[in-house]
Length: 332
Ligand code: KG4
Ligand code: ZN
Image (cartoon, rainbow, N blue to C red; front, side, top):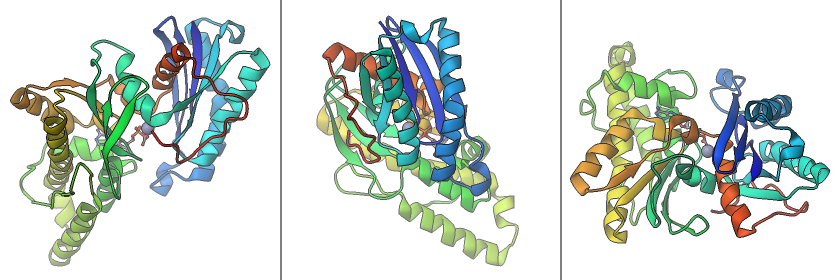
């Protein structure tokens, strides 16, 4: 079975080819145009998808050594994401499926982040608990099967990735700030500046308090010493990162204990964070957890995870018609 998948939910244009369970290509074109604006500009994102999509799909087919006529199905990200961006990928997938007379598969982006764990070994066994942390989402999900998932906790304001990016911006770091903050944090003292850990009832998360606390703290200190941020950059990064990680771990620990789950999976772009990875490994040793983190290229937005999810849907007979529409707020 040969599936072509297209991902265009935010600012990465990606295409992947899955042949008989083997990922044969996963091409990603990252849009640089947003850096100068310090955030993703939706209109520019859809235009860049239009420019990148055909060459990205062609590269994915070429790398997999196949032609379009070899495809058995065409999959695409239906949502959630930016409407304009989703429409570009969705229209392309629909047209291609129609022209080839092949089935169309509409994939949920958040499910795909979770099912990225099934691209390579080792794979978690059902049921497991997944913490999905990206630029747009922070969710705790009980994954009962490939098709049956339940959100038990989520952010009420900013996503974890946004917490990284927005605080990094306050420190004057380039966009997206998450990876820069991570790098600088490695040389800093995580306990130097105590910021508030977001506490929420149940398993929900809140990060907006951290952003405000960092803003006021920097303002206050800079008034006394204009070079405060520059002189304390590594410690600020380490302290912010530590706070975000503690906010995530607090709910993860409680959810795992209450749900009696010991297989813990991490998904989404923030899974690349070195501090979070280390904290999870330490926690695993303390709690007897088995922790699963996909390879880096399958954590950030990519079409391989969409292809893998599409395979599960293909096997379940879950196909879309030409009437399917992109949904920026698609639920899990
Ligand atoms: O999953 P993703 O690629 O896109 C979304 O669907 O949002 O996640 C991107 C997010 C950005 O907020 C980025 O700053 C963050 O993941 N990120 C990181 C790191 N690498 C990426 N955050 C902290 N540390 C990192 N190393
Ligand atoms: Zn994503």
